[in-house]
Image (cartoon, rainbow, N blue to C red; front, side, top):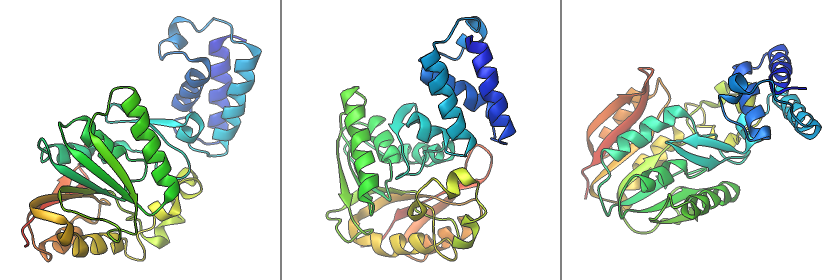
Length: 284
């Protein structure tokens, strides 16, 4: 069987299983198995694949047809131009979250100390450290399994020369084990309302960690906790930035303004939806 025919077989199976972006996923899985590139489908579609490649590819197509996320099958996801390991213990990094990193980069200066609350895969913190100079970072998460992924991502980036900054990861229930003070706090906390989770697509509902999704009844639980407690861990003038759901901007903005934050802004992503709330700590 040639490369193009195998791709077509995979695409049809994903389409029959009603997988969104079936053609894209079929191509990416084939490239993953064959270690090929995007243009190979057009330029070298008539080349033969081995029986081992065909068997491995169709096995992944079968798994993707059951709504296992693409990134759990390939084991990686690109974010901010860097490659991160992902698995069932962490949220898959999404392009929407790049808005949070890009806004934080406007506020991060050389030598700052950065705290990433609910760090997950570490993609936010590690991206900020990659694109800054002489900063140090601490990533905090309740999940030991998530922290293992974050540590591996840091090690992988360091091995490739893409991370030179000092970084540590801390198991903590929010601030319980945090020490010291920070110049920037970033967070993509769980913010989906509990009752909404059951309606999410199966790739998210069944395969991503519930504790990284569930923001309790109103979706604001972790914003309230972080905002009310973070003052003891921030230098005066520190910037705090949250990723938010599209309909949470006004509420999170008010929480910050009620807790000694000034110049609070609600910022939009590329789709024009509210995605980030940022403000400056004016306490102490």
